[in-house]
Length: 173
Image 1: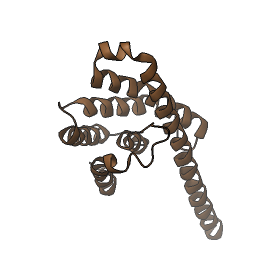
Image 2 (image 1 turned 45 degrees about the horizontal axis):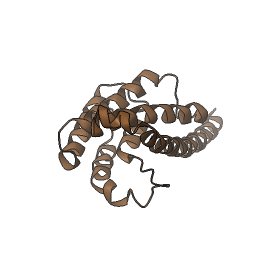
Image 3 (image 1 turned 120 degrees about the vertical axis):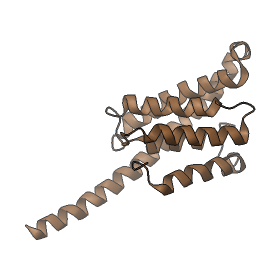
């Protein structure tokens, strides 16, 4: 587990515990984003080792143990999220905000559809397709806006770090 810092794993575990308590506070018109899914995808960027799968598997299993009637629902979603990040990781960077925003919108839309099928079943999903899609579109838009905000923070952080390192290099040379 060298690829992950210990505080990221603890943050995700704490997020699993507290998400149901504060998710209503941060919902926008009933769109409740899964912060566990969002931050698992966000922290998976830049990780090239199989540690991402271990973290996704353990956090998904922990989530399923706490909230799901059967094991595997969130584990499958988190593993698919990690696969999507690994597949698009070379194209999507934290510093490229338009592509990061589009990636989070599309991947959240697809993953929330898979999650809806797993939660309600294919028949009910098909019968209430328009209603479910309206909610999933809001959730995906919410995730894209959050990705843009976090992308801007990462960009500013790397910009400040590069300026500090650049100034040190100039003094030394």
